Length: 157
Image (cartoon, rainbow, N blue to C red; front, side, top):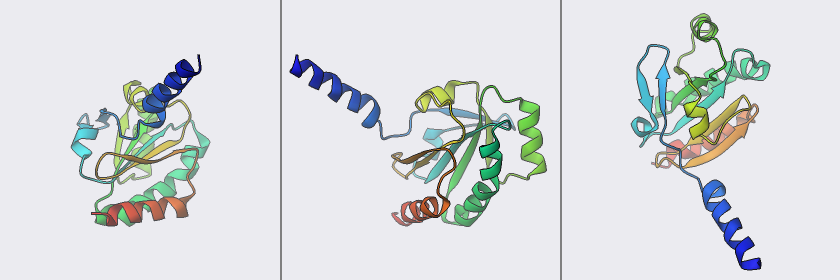
């Protein structure tokens, strides 16, 4: 019985805890263009799941813009993925009026599923050049920690 419990725990670790690499996912940008995690391989990138109806998402977005602007010159990529329940017109309006400088995608639910069934917003993944997930933030990140993490990842060329 103990052996079975150990095997289940080990399988759970490899299925969840051991799942340290970003999944294969394709994002459909507002422009209709598609970007996949395969396209981002070799780059440090962030995937931020958010919604226009999420007050924490809206509060953190100016800091996300600042973070992106701070690190884009060093090669940071950023995809803000609006949840499937978000109204495309609201996402487009927010993106245009706030002049979001990074890629904004509309999810049909598949990207959220591929990233571990994301349901809470905001949820942000930081991925290194090898496709390894360095950190998953649920809720607004501690931006000083996030900036340090990005700085280290971008320098680790």
